[in-house]
Length: 358
Image 1 (tube, rainbow, N blue to C red):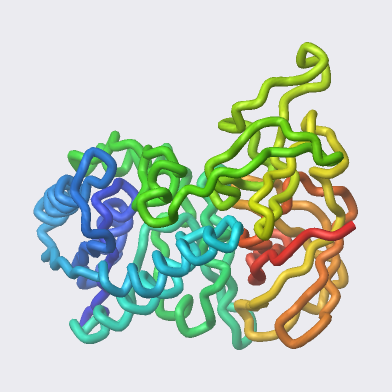
Image 2 (cartoon, helix red, strand yellow):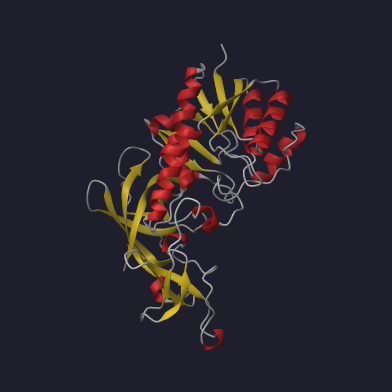
């Protein structure tokens, strides 16, 4: 009897090719389209995405089901997203979406439909080592998504298949073209899924009231005004609305800190300003994919998805609190983002950044 796999179909090329590969390998494959956001506009294309997923499934002659997880997404992901911004932090909802929706709601729903395992179009790989399953980076360094999956546990990754993790993106598109999928050239989705190409401040102001305050420099000198400190990110340059002093010779202005109590944004001039760099950070909600702390004294870590991995060491301060020390200063360590740890191509886990230190 064939093993039944249900693939999370997004309407994109990655999940389409994942489905095709699994069918070629002899699995019984079904598709499941998840609607996680109640909106259909120029920014959210769920209706077109569903049509694209349906065309893929028709081509492969596999069934496609649809399920609405928008309430679960609102309660477990979006509320958290807003709450973090209200605190002046910079959350990454895609990480929580994976743990709470794709690898919990989607997984449980698929089991109820008779699936043995689920599959997604993520660019990651898994590999068994002794009695553990390791999460590995995808083979395409430009598409690797292990950062977003660092909070998965042993049960979640052992019951999931990632068919395209070994492929480069260009090969995925070639594969899709061979199958004549209509979405073979469809652009990858970028940014936060429910925001799309909208201005972040404009979107957030629908849920969080604007609160005008001052932008000041390190000495307290007023440089301009802002619409609310929660709408800005540490290290942000664009959108401050203040020009350079000294004819701009010292460079542009960057957000270095946020004073939530006084509703003030602290800005410094020049990307190399020391206030933008720190060698340490405190992080909470520590999670290790293997279930135990790593034994290596030195690891590599990312402090944002597109950031570079840098050598670090970890000191356990409490059951759920760690001190991460880097060999080199890191630019714009942002509370609310995740620090994710690696050993070679193995994603070990990660933690939630609370604040930077020197």
